[in-house]
Image (cartoon, rainbow, N blue to C red; front, side, top):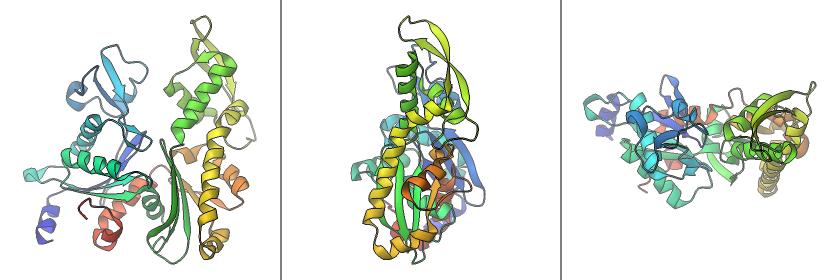
Length: 348
Protein backbone atom coordinates (compact mmCIF):
# COMPACT_ATOMS: atom_id res chain seq x y z
CA UNK A 1 0.00 0.00 0.00
CA UNK A 2 2.83 2.40 0.92
CA UNK A 3 4.69 1.68 -2.33
CA UNK A 4 1.45 2.14 -4.28
CA UNK A 5 1.04 5.61 -2.76
CA UNK A 6 4.63 6.53 -3.61
CA UNK A 7 4.15 5.41 -7.22
CA UNK A 8 0.87 7.32 -7.32
CA UNK A 9 2.74 10.55 -6.63
CA UNK A 10 4.53 10.19 -9.97
CA UNK A 11 1.69 8.63 -11.97
CA UNK A 12 -1.18 10.18 -13.90
CA UNK A 13 -3.86 7.64 -13.02
CA UNK A 14 -6.87 7.67 -15.32
CA UNK A 15 -10.40 6.45 -15.83
CA UNK A 16 -11.36 5.18 -19.28
CA UNK A 17 -14.76 4.78 -20.90
CA UNK A 18 -13.65 2.27 -23.54
CA UNK A 19 -16.62 2.49 -25.88
CA UNK A 20 -17.50 0.81 -29.15
CA UNK A 21 -17.73 4.18 -30.93
CA UNK A 22 -15.76 6.57 -28.72
CA UNK A 23 -13.19 6.41 -25.95
CA UNK A 24 -13.11 9.05 -23.21
CA UNK A 25 -10.36 9.47 -20.63
CA UNK A 26 -10.64 11.36 -17.34
CA UNK A 27 -7.86 12.36 -14.94
CA UNK A 28 -8.32 13.21 -11.27
CA UNK A 29 -8.64 16.97 -10.81
CA UNK A 30 -8.76 17.61 -14.56
CA UNK A 31 -11.99 16.01 -15.75
CA UNK A 32 -12.25 14.75 -19.33
CA UNK A 33 -8.84 15.13 -20.98
CA UNK A 34 -9.38 13.05 -24.12
CA UNK A 35 -12.36 12.09 -26.26
CA UNK A 36 -11.61 10.24 -29.48
CA UNK A 37 -13.40 7.79 -31.79
CA UNK A 38 -12.46 4.16 -31.12
CA UNK A 39 -10.95 3.66 -34.57
CA UNK A 40 -7.46 2.63 -35.68
CA UNK A 41 -5.96 2.78 -39.19
CA UNK A 42 -3.56 -0.06 -40.09
CA UNK A 43 -1.72 -1.37 -43.12
CA UNK A 44 -4.02 -3.84 -44.86
CA UNK A 45 -3.22 -7.44 -43.97
CA UNK A 46 -1.14 -6.41 -40.93
CA UNK A 47 -1.65 -5.00 -37.46
CA UNK A 48 0.86 -2.21 -38.03
CA UNK A 49 -0.69 1.11 -37.02
CA UNK A 50 -0.06 3.87 -39.53
CA UNK A 51 2.36 6.73 -38.88
CA UNK A 52 3.61 5.43 -35.55
CA UNK A 53 0.17 5.55 -33.94
CA UNK A 54 -1.02 8.92 -35.24
CA UNK A 55 -3.85 7.33 -37.23
CA UNK A 56 -5.87 6.58 -34.11
CA UNK A 57 -9.09 8.29 -33.13
CA UNK A 58 -10.50 11.16 -35.18
CA UNK A 59 -7.86 10.88 -37.93
CA UNK A 60 -8.65 7.19 -38.40
CA UNK A 61 -12.43 7.69 -38.31
CA UNK A 62 -12.17 10.02 -41.29
CA UNK A 63 -10.88 7.01 -43.25
CA UNK A 64 -13.95 4.82 -42.59
CA UNK A 65 -15.42 3.96 -45.97
CA UNK A 66 -12.81 6.15 -47.70
CA UNK A 67 -9.50 4.36 -47.11
CA UNK A 68 -7.38 3.28 -50.12
CA UNK A 69 -6.92 -0.46 -50.81
CA UNK A 70 -3.69 -0.71 -48.76
CA UNK A 71 -5.24 0.72 -45.56
CA UNK A 72 -7.89 -0.66 -43.21
CA UNK A 73 -9.76 1.58 -40.78
CA UNK A 74 -10.72 -0.77 -37.94
CA UNK A 75 -12.99 -0.42 -34.94
CA UNK A 76 -11.38 -2.90 -32.50
CA UNK A 77 -14.38 -2.73 -30.13
CA UNK A 78 -17.63 -4.43 -31.09
CA UNK A 79 -20.75 -4.66 -28.94
CA UNK A 80 -18.83 -3.06 -26.08
CA UNK A 81 -16.04 -5.67 -25.98
CA UNK A 82 -12.70 -6.25 -27.67
CA UNK A 83 -13.11 -7.78 -31.11
CA UNK A 84 -9.47 -7.38 -32.25
CA UNK A 85 -7.07 -7.79 -29.34
CA UNK A 86 -3.85 -6.49 -30.95
CA UNK A 87 -5.50 -3.43 -32.45
CA UNK A 88 -7.34 -2.68 -29.20
CA UNK A 89 -4.04 -2.90 -27.31
CA UNK A 90 -2.43 -0.46 -29.77
CA UNK A 91 -5.36 1.94 -29.38
CA UNK A 92 -5.31 1.82 -25.57
CA UNK A 93 -1.53 2.33 -25.57
CA UNK A 94 -1.94 5.37 -27.81
CA UNK A 95 -4.53 6.91 -25.48
CA UNK A 96 -2.49 6.14 -22.34
CA UNK A 97 0.66 7.64 -23.88
CA UNK A 98 -1.20 10.80 -24.87
CA UNK A 99 -2.49 11.37 -21.34
CA UNK A 100 0.20 9.95 -19.06
CA UNK A 101 3.45 11.72 -18.25
CA UNK A 102 5.68 8.67 -17.75
CA UNK A 103 8.05 10.02 -15.12
CA UNK A 104 10.90 7.59 -14.38
CA UNK A 105 9.00 4.82 -16.11
CA UNK A 106 6.14 4.82 -13.59
CA UNK A 107 2.98 3.37 -15.10
CA UNK A 108 -0.58 4.56 -14.33
CA UNK A 109 -3.43 2.86 -12.54
CA UNK A 110 -6.47 2.65 -14.79
CA UNK A 111 -10.19 2.20 -14.10
CA UNK A 112 -12.02 0.96 -17.20
CA UNK A 113 -15.80 0.82 -17.65
CA UNK A 114 -17.11 -2.36 -19.27
CA UNK A 115 -20.60 -3.68 -20.13
CA UNK A 116 -22.27 -5.45 -17.22
CA UNK A 117 -22.99 -8.51 -19.36
CA UNK A 118 -19.50 -9.35 -20.61
CA UNK A 119 -18.06 -12.80 -20.00
CA UNK A 120 -15.07 -13.72 -17.87
CA UNK A 121 -13.01 -14.25 -21.03
CA UNK A 122 -13.94 -10.78 -22.28
CA UNK A 123 -13.04 -9.26 -18.90
CA UNK A 124 -9.62 -10.91 -18.99
CA UNK A 125 -9.10 -9.60 -22.52
CA UNK A 126 -9.68 -6.01 -21.34
CA UNK A 127 -7.37 -6.52 -18.34
CA UNK A 128 -4.64 -8.00 -20.49
CA UNK A 129 -4.89 -5.39 -23.25
CA UNK A 130 -4.66 -2.51 -20.77
CA UNK A 131 -1.73 -4.05 -18.88
CA UNK A 132 0.18 -4.76 -22.10
CA UNK A 133 -0.59 -1.20 -23.20
CA UNK A 134 1.21 0.20 -20.15
CA UNK A 135 -1.15 0.20 -17.15
CA UNK A 136 0.37 -0.62 -13.74
CA UNK A 137 -2.93 -1.78 -12.26
CA UNK A 138 -6.27 -2.26 -14.01
CA UNK A 139 -9.69 -2.09 -12.35
CA UNK A 140 -12.95 -2.81 -14.15
CA UNK A 141 -16.33 -1.30 -13.24
CA UNK A 142 -19.71 -1.97 -14.83
CA UNK A 143 -20.84 0.84 -17.12
CA UNK A 144 -24.26 1.44 -15.47
CA UNK A 145 -22.60 1.72 -12.05
CA UNK A 146 -20.08 4.23 -13.44
CA UNK A 147 -22.86 6.12 -15.25
CA UNK A 148 -24.91 6.34 -12.06
CA UNK A 149 -22.15 7.80 -9.92
CA UNK A 150 -20.97 10.01 -12.80
CA UNK A 151 -24.46 11.48 -13.16
CA UNK A 152 -24.67 12.23 -9.46
CA UNK A 153 -27.21 9.57 -8.48
CA UNK A 154 -27.17 8.52 -4.79
CA UNK A 155 -26.19 4.96 -5.69
CA UNK A 156 -24.71 4.25 -2.25
CA UNK A 157 -28.00 5.00 -0.46
CA UNK A 158 -30.74 2.41 0.34
CA UNK A 159 -33.03 3.70 -2.41
CA UNK A 160 -33.39 2.56 -6.01
CA UNK A 161 -31.75 4.41 -8.87
CA UNK A 162 -32.33 3.16 -12.41
CA UNK A 163 -29.91 3.86 -15.24
CA UNK A 164 -30.37 3.25 -18.98
CA UNK A 165 -27.09 3.87 -20.81
CA UNK A 166 -27.53 3.72 -24.60
CA UNK A 167 -24.03 3.49 -26.04
CA UNK A 168 -22.66 2.61 -29.45
CA UNK A 169 -22.47 -1.16 -29.09
CA UNK A 170 -24.55 -1.98 -26.01
CA UNK A 171 -27.43 -0.65 -23.99
CA UNK A 172 -26.87 -1.05 -20.25
CA UNK A 173 -29.89 -1.16 -17.96
CA UNK A 174 -29.52 -1.44 -14.19
CA UNK A 175 -31.23 -0.80 -10.89
CA UNK A 176 -28.69 0.39 -8.30
CA UNK A 177 -28.86 0.60 -4.52
CA UNK A 178 -26.30 0.60 -1.68
CA UNK A 179 -23.43 1.05 -4.18
CA UNK A 180 -24.27 -2.24 -5.86
CA UNK A 181 -26.12 -3.47 -8.94
CA UNK A 182 -29.38 -5.08 -7.78
CA UNK A 183 -30.41 -6.25 -11.22
CA UNK A 184 -29.12 -5.48 -14.68
CA UNK A 185 -29.48 -6.30 -18.34
CA UNK A 186 -26.91 -5.71 -21.07
CA UNK A 187 -28.15 -5.98 -24.65
CA UNK A 188 -26.06 -5.65 -27.76
CA UNK A 189 -28.52 -3.30 -29.41
CA UNK A 190 -27.60 0.38 -29.38
CA UNK A 191 -26.37 3.24 -31.56
CA UNK A 192 -24.66 1.05 -34.16
CA UNK A 193 -27.89 -0.91 -34.68
CA UNK A 194 -29.73 2.36 -35.19
CA UNK A 195 -27.23 3.30 -37.90
CA UNK A 196 -27.67 -0.11 -39.56
CA UNK A 197 -31.46 0.24 -39.42
CA UNK A 198 -31.24 3.62 -41.16
CA UNK A 199 -28.92 2.27 -43.87
CA UNK A 200 -31.24 -0.71 -44.43
CA UNK A 201 -34.28 1.59 -44.70
CA UNK A 202 -32.60 3.88 -47.24
CA UNK A 203 -31.50 0.85 -49.27
CA UNK A 204 -34.99 -0.72 -49.23
CA UNK A 205 -37.16 2.35 -49.68
CA UNK A 206 -34.91 4.53 -51.85
CA UNK A 207 -32.69 1.92 -53.58
CA UNK A 208 -29.66 3.83 -52.36
CA UNK A 209 -26.55 2.37 -50.75
CA UNK A 210 -25.01 4.53 -48.02
CA UNK A 211 -22.08 3.92 -45.70
CA UNK A 212 -21.89 3.80 -41.92
CA UNK A 213 -20.71 7.43 -41.50
CA UNK A 214 -23.61 8.69 -43.65
CA UNK A 215 -26.15 6.67 -41.70
CA UNK A 216 -24.76 8.13 -38.47
CA UNK A 217 -25.03 11.67 -39.87
CA UNK A 218 -28.68 11.03 -40.78
CA UNK A 219 -29.39 9.79 -37.24
CA UNK A 220 -27.75 12.85 -35.69
CA UNK A 221 -29.29 15.35 -38.12
CA UNK A 222 -32.92 14.21 -38.40
CA UNK A 223 -33.33 11.01 -36.34
CA UNK A 224 -36.03 10.95 -33.67
CA UNK A 225 -37.96 8.58 -31.40
CA UNK A 226 -40.95 10.87 -30.79
CA UNK A 227 -42.95 13.04 -33.23
CA UNK A 228 -41.36 16.46 -33.68
CA UNK A 229 -43.12 19.81 -33.60
CA UNK A 230 -41.50 20.50 -36.94
CA UNK A 231 -40.50 17.47 -38.93
CA UNK A 232 -37.11 17.53 -40.68
CA UNK A 233 -35.64 16.38 -43.96
CA UNK A 234 -32.16 15.85 -45.32
CA UNK A 235 -30.45 15.33 -48.65
CA UNK A 236 -28.47 12.09 -48.78
CA UNK A 237 -25.99 10.91 -51.39
CA UNK A 238 -24.86 7.37 -52.16
CA UNK A 239 -24.79 4.69 -54.87
CA UNK A 240 -27.88 3.55 -56.75
CA UNK A 241 -28.53 -0.15 -56.11
CA UNK A 242 -29.78 -0.70 -59.69
CA UNK A 243 -27.54 1.41 -61.93
CA UNK A 244 -24.53 1.50 -59.63
CA UNK A 245 -24.20 5.22 -60.30
CA UNK A 246 -23.90 7.99 -57.68
CA UNK A 247 -27.09 9.92 -56.93
CA UNK A 248 -28.90 11.85 -54.21
CA UNK A 249 -32.20 11.39 -52.37
CA UNK A 250 -34.20 13.26 -49.74
CA UNK A 251 -35.14 11.46 -46.53
CA UNK A 252 -37.42 12.67 -43.74
CA UNK A 253 -37.51 12.46 -39.96
CA UNK A 254 -40.85 10.60 -40.14
CA UNK A 255 -39.39 7.73 -42.13
CA UNK A 256 -36.25 7.65 -39.99
CA UNK A 257 -38.45 7.34 -36.92
CA UNK A 258 -40.08 4.32 -38.53
CA UNK A 259 -36.67 2.87 -39.38
CA UNK A 260 -35.47 3.29 -35.79
CA UNK A 261 -38.57 1.75 -34.22
CA UNK A 262 -37.10 -1.78 -34.29
CA UNK A 263 -33.95 -1.23 -32.19
CA UNK A 264 -35.78 1.24 -29.91
CA UNK A 265 -38.53 -1.26 -29.14
CA UNK A 266 -35.85 -3.87 -28.32
CA UNK A 267 -34.45 -1.43 -25.74
CA UNK A 268 -37.93 -0.90 -24.26
CA UNK A 269 -38.41 -4.66 -23.96
CA UNK A 270 -35.13 -5.00 -22.05
CA UNK A 271 -36.17 -2.19 -19.68
CA UNK A 272 -39.49 -3.93 -19.00
CA UNK A 273 -37.63 -7.18 -18.28
CA UNK A 274 -35.46 -5.47 -15.65
CA UNK A 275 -38.47 -3.77 -14.06
CA UNK A 276 -40.34 -7.08 -13.86
CA UNK A 277 -37.46 -8.58 -11.86
CA UNK A 278 -36.91 -5.59 -9.55
CA UNK A 279 -37.84 -6.20 -5.86
CA UNK A 280 -41.17 -4.53 -4.92
CA UNK A 281 -39.73 -2.01 -2.45
CA UNK A 282 -37.23 -0.78 -5.01
CA UNK A 283 -39.94 -0.70 -7.67
CA UNK A 284 -41.87 1.63 -5.39
CA UNK A 285 -38.90 4.03 -5.33
CA UNK A 286 -38.86 4.14 -9.14
CA UNK A 287 -42.47 5.35 -9.38
CA UNK A 288 -41.28 8.80 -8.31
CA UNK A 289 -37.54 8.64 -9.05
CA UNK A 290 -37.94 7.24 -12.54
CA UNK A 291 -35.13 6.44 -14.97
CA UNK A 292 -31.91 8.30 -15.77
CA UNK A 293 -31.11 8.16 -19.50
CA UNK A 294 -27.49 8.61 -20.59
CA UNK A 295 -24.98 7.58 -23.26
CA UNK A 296 -24.55 8.88 -26.79
CA UNK A 297 -27.74 7.18 -27.95
CA UNK A 298 -29.69 9.17 -25.36
CA UNK A 299 -29.21 12.25 -27.55
CA UNK A 300 -31.62 10.87 -30.15
CA UNK A 301 -34.41 13.45 -30.36
CA UNK A 302 -37.36 12.67 -28.14
CA UNK A 303 -36.02 9.37 -26.82
CA UNK A 304 -36.68 10.39 -23.22
CA UNK A 305 -40.31 11.34 -23.99
CA UNK A 306 -40.93 8.23 -26.08
CA UNK A 307 -39.38 5.99 -23.40
CA UNK A 308 -41.49 7.58 -20.68
CA UNK A 309 -44.65 6.96 -22.73
CA UNK A 310 -43.67 3.34 -23.44
CA UNK A 311 -42.55 2.41 -19.90
CA UNK A 312 -44.99 4.64 -17.98
CA UNK A 313 -42.28 6.00 -15.68
CA UNK A 314 -40.60 9.41 -15.50
CA UNK A 315 -37.47 9.51 -17.70
CA UNK A 316 -34.81 12.19 -17.19
CA UNK A 317 -31.99 12.90 -19.61
CA UNK A 318 -28.63 13.27 -17.84
CA UNK A 319 -27.08 16.74 -17.88
CA UNK A 320 -24.06 15.44 -19.82
CA UNK A 321 -25.18 12.07 -21.21
CA UNK A 322 -22.03 11.53 -23.29
CA UNK A 323 -19.60 11.75 -20.38
CA UNK A 324 -21.44 10.19 -17.41
CA UNK A 325 -19.54 6.89 -17.63
CA UNK A 326 -16.15 8.57 -18.03
CA UNK A 327 -16.79 10.89 -15.09
CA UNK A 328 -17.87 7.86 -13.07
CA UNK A 329 -14.62 6.01 -13.75
CA UNK A 330 -12.75 9.07 -12.49
CA UNK A 331 -14.81 9.16 -9.29
CA UNK A 332 -14.16 5.47 -8.67
CA UNK A 333 -10.45 6.17 -9.21
CA UNK A 334 -10.53 8.93 -6.59
CA UNK A 335 -12.24 6.59 -4.11
CA UNK A 336 -10.49 3.28 -4.68
CA UNK A 337 -10.39 2.50 -0.96
CA UNK A 338 -14.12 3.08 -0.60
CA UNK A 339 -15.15 1.17 -3.71
CA UNK A 340 -12.47 -1.55 -3.85
CA UNK A 341 -15.06 -4.24 -3.08
CA UNK A 342 -17.12 -3.43 -6.17
CA UNK A 343 -14.21 -3.10 -8.60
CA UNK A 344 -12.76 -6.04 -10.49
CA UNK A 345 -8.97 -5.87 -10.18
CA UNK A 346 -8.48 -9.18 -11.97
CA UNK A 347 -6.45 -10.67 -9.10
CA UNK A 348 -9.19 -11.87 -6.80
